Image 1 (cartoon, rainbow, N blue to C red):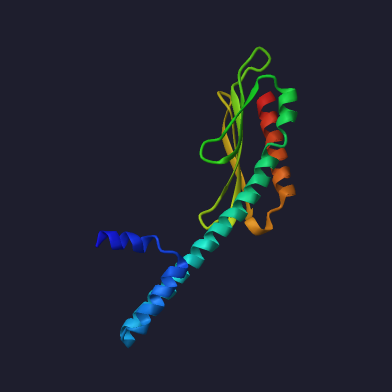
Image 2: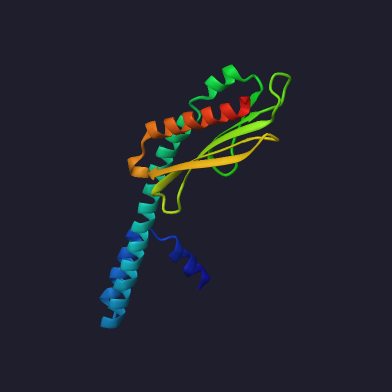
Length: 172
């Protein structure tokens, strides 16, 4: 019995449909109805899974574009701050700039820019976190927009505004 159930698990869509038709040919009316309902349910689940995979691919493409925008000012910062190093944020795409206390700069600090999608994969959150340790409390901000209507210029403006806010706090 377990050998037959394992065969059932690996059947392809074509095989399932043919088997279903063969069962229907010899089944009673109620068995036919139950088999049709089961077949419709399987098809519905398959279509839903395909839709979810397509949404995920679309989100990944948009997240890659946003991630590139988040990293777009790295060279600018690197040229101006010799005490800066790059790191990855935990649990999201993006970048974390870490500024280490030095003779020239008297504070440890960080600026983190991340992107992630919501549970339905229909919207993106672009988030920022910054802190000048020992000088100012952590500050967080975000913008959201629909995946299908993402405005990369809006993301770039947000990033530039957050970098400017950070530099003001860091250098004051």
